[in-house]
Length: 326
Image (cartoon, rainbow, N blue to C red):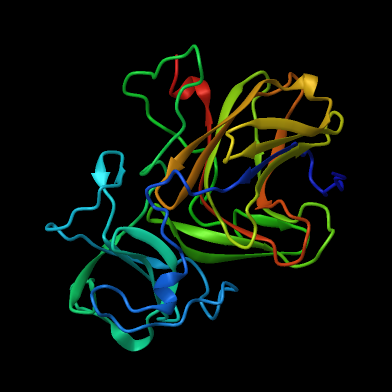
């Protein structure tokens, strides 16, 4: 893959292309059937979101419903995930993004959602409580081989706005790409990253991060397929010289390969692992920075080089390994 130099001090590329197979996941139900069929509870059909953001701008407020008589089997750090979840946008447009313990393709709810004076919302006879999501609340990187978890470690995410890729204060874009809120992965707000042209060099949502030299990092994120079955995570640096790595991971076979590498000898201990997550997959890339590296742009995109290729991303996490392992 050919990379274009971006107007930034430094830049590093690291891509992970992952075929998202759901055959081994307990959330293997279709993400589209809720929008085309009535639910088992008899709720009326609702049209599915077009996936292009519709009129929904900005980060949605999140509301959750837990049914104590039907607790979800899937958990986040030992606590059950919500049975139902609604995203309410500034425009007052509402979407149902979790239904019967599953992340689903966003469903428009129209005027059927009402806001209560106590800060809750009402939908289909159920009261939903507000929830403010936090990074690491569902899954986080595990220690690489040879290291053990640090006792009472305080996890620190080095990304700004890790749960909101549409926050233009902290996240930018490279190339012609659309970045919009789109449903949830494991109950976390997800963003659909879509290529708007074909053949362009790696259009993506990205954020520049200062990195310490000779330091081991863990870079993690949730992903779910959109129109593409492959997701790409990239890091790229041009200082002191151009350096790039592309990692490919196949979720059917579990194999990983590296390609399109430039001067990869500078990066040490590079490996990638994946774990099945509710509604998608959770990936972690471990790497050690070179001695002269100052910082990097880190980006996420669909890997397919065709117009309309899209993937959903949630909770981008960047940590130094020493902060939680020893």
